[in-house]
Length: 312
Ligand code: NAD
Ligand code: UDP
Image 1 (spheres, rainbow, N blue to C red):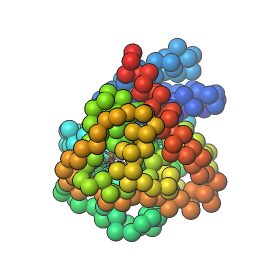
Image 2 (cartoon, rainbow, N blue to C red):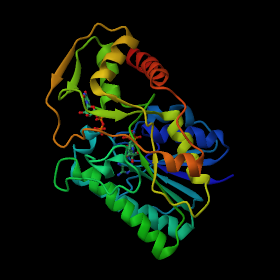
Image 3 (cartoon, protein in one colour):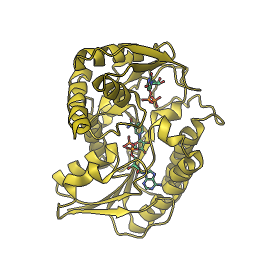
Image 4 (cartoon, rainbow, N blue to C red):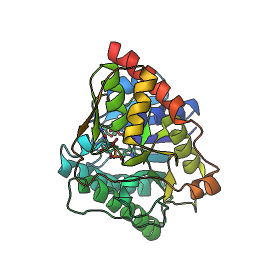
């Protein structure tokens, strides 16, 4: 049995990861300051004898004994990470330094939840790990994009300088149950709007594209990566290469919810990437991983989740 720490464990992805790790008979220490996460996401885990929750901010040092660390702590939605941009950069950078220091002392393997945002508004499609990105360093998204880029730098310097076993995953848009209903991300927004019979807010002309990966596929990718041989450091893209435009997504969600909400157009946020699509050749080859859940199936599960949680 391994003792595994998940920072950001009460968030959307973290809560699914904690549940899967417990399912694989690991001891789980969930560390979270509950900025965007919630106790509700981990309610079903609190009674588990191998689960422990610790309220802690990763920008401060932490002294615990662990075998593996998944570093997920960081608000992920543009709405939340732009709310307190200085704290977002601190969480990414100071958080990475503290967690890497912990990994060094305990000789733990450490996984970093990096992001497709390191590619910024990409000039190439699909994006492979070799692409260095096209990021505005001073725009409103920079606290997140540059914070995550600096965290990657730190991970690779700890690897080269101290021989740490690092696993850097570049996560593309992921969705599913336990997303925060007000976090402003497109799938949660559209589903909540459709269920509440409010207009669906498409930003810009809705022709920008994203690729959406269902959470179950993503968590399987995290765990395969953590279990892979030590020399596989990444960065490895994890995401679903199937893309759709935001207008197509809105129409799909209207159809799947049976909602008669209208679609309205709002201004495109500054620096909003025009396209995003992962090249997952590396993940397929080195991890034998690829997403299995088609968008419609994942959306149905997510719609069912929001229908239940908005009623309660
Ligand atoms: P989320 O906002 O639901 O979860 C983040 C968690 O981190 C929350 O529980 C929050 O309370 C916690 N947190 C934030 N700052 C903290 C701090 N200083 N100390 C301790 N805890 C802190 O977001 P998510 O979608 O679950 O994302 C998890 C990770 O995956 C993030 O690092 C994010 O950047 C990355 N990621 C997610 C996506 C996605 O589509 N969901 C895409 C790319 C990268
Ligand atoms: N978006 C939208 N309507 C919304 C929320 C988002 O059209 O209510 C668009 C947003 O402009 C972006 C895409 O959906 O082009 C994905 O946004 P999200 O915030 O989910 O994540 P991002 O990929 O931008 O980090």
